[in-house]
Image (cartoon, rainbow, N blue to C red):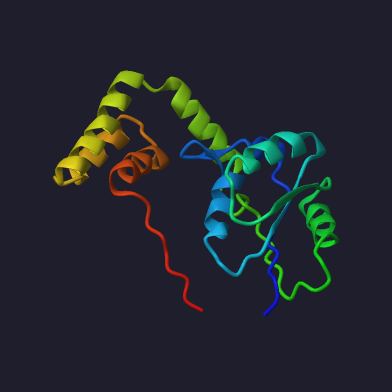
Length: 175
């Protein structure tokens, strides 16, 4: 089996700024994909004005495989085509992965932004602290998580506090 070159197509500007637990979604996705030992390199297509900043952000991750950030097109299809044109001919398999599109809609992003802007930070912060404290003490998390949700904490925020205590599950790849 030869090298595998995943290609992540363009992330529209409004969506490419989305973060998962404070990490840009494209970086979050690359971290996950980098856990697969069969992947030899990454090609990421994005808007021309995002190439420099995205390249710097990805470089700061020190991923174990090379990453090239390429100019994409005006549409997802154009971006995929441009990235595929850069795949070496000896590559046996290509994974085309749109880092966020299947997961998040623009409306969802706007609703979360609006929620964060209007919620009261004191009860929100206290509730998330209680989730983390309960996790550290080994207590039942249900009531603390419910209180955090009632204080308008997002799933990502609650999950982040739980990850701070328990770490992150690493799936074993079985082929």
